[in-house]
Structures are given as C-alpha cells and as structure tokens.
Length: 193
Image (cartoon, rainbow, N blue to C red; front, side, top):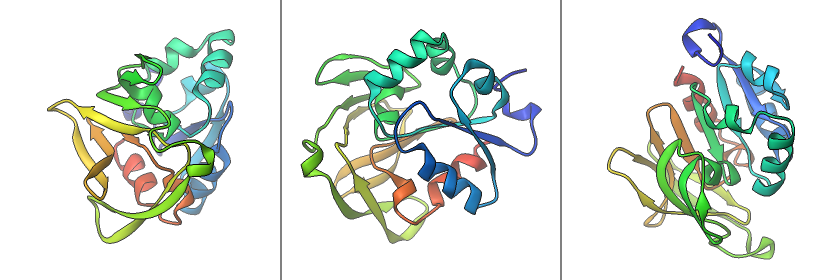
C-alpha cells in the first residue's frame, strides 16, 4: 500500500522539491545514511515512506501541486511527516495572517511571518526534548505556533515559546533544523517509521 511505512524497509524519505530549501534536507539525510528522493510528482509521492515539507513559499507550493494534481494526496499522506517553517504552516489545522485552513495533519494554529520579514530572520539557541545541549534554531520569515490541542506534544522551545510539536507520526517545526548542523530531528523523523 502506498505511503504505508510498514510495507517498505529500509525507509525512503521524500523531500518535497517544488521550491524552497529541499537540498539542505537531502544533504542531512545523505549524511546519516538514509535513502531519500526529491518529490515533485504524485507517482514519486507514492514511492516514499516518510515525507519532509521544507521551508519555502506556501502559495507557490500550493499552485504547483494543485496544477499537477497531487495537492490532496500530499494532505492525506499517512506516513511520518516533518514540516519545517512553511511546512509547519501547511500541516496546521488553522493558519493566521492571512487566515485560512491548512491540511489539518496537526491540531495547531500557526501565525505566518510572526517574527517579521526576511530582514528580521535570526538564529538563536533553543532547547529540544531529545538533548540537554542548546539547539541552534534558524528562523527565516518564521511562523509561530500559537495554539496546540491537548493531544499535541511540544518538543522544541525558544525561551518560553513552543517552536516544535509532534502528534503521532507528524512533526512540525517553525525553524530550519537542516541549517543547524544537528541531525537530531531528521533521525527522529526516520525513527517514526
């Protein structure tokens, strides 16, 4: 069955490669020895067990995926998913500024560009659930998670703000872990299989 991680071993991670920083994710996956492919079509989406939705422009992603006929297939992907920055916006149930609905993979509300425009991008040390060490978080026109449901578990923080969450096999991060030099979140995604 397509998108069922139990039918594939070892995992094959797909990185949505319509636009955005997908190449940096592919480099991290290669470094940790995980098979990965760029995903630009519905048939490529059918081949993978895990999906990464990278940062980028959500309007561009939506336009291309709708025109190519696999927007709904992305929204219904059953395997483990990690969304970073823009990816976390698409995974949300509710989006603010402008208001809208995401795919609903996670019962969260996300506010777009909550830290400001591109010139307000920054790097800061936050904390993550799986390590005692500070984790370098890169925020580029980043969103903020402003509401989470009871079944959604925080896994990353910057000061007192939640910057990462997980529920079941879906994980959303408002920052760019692929730019941090730490592969912990990519390993966590692969381990969700």
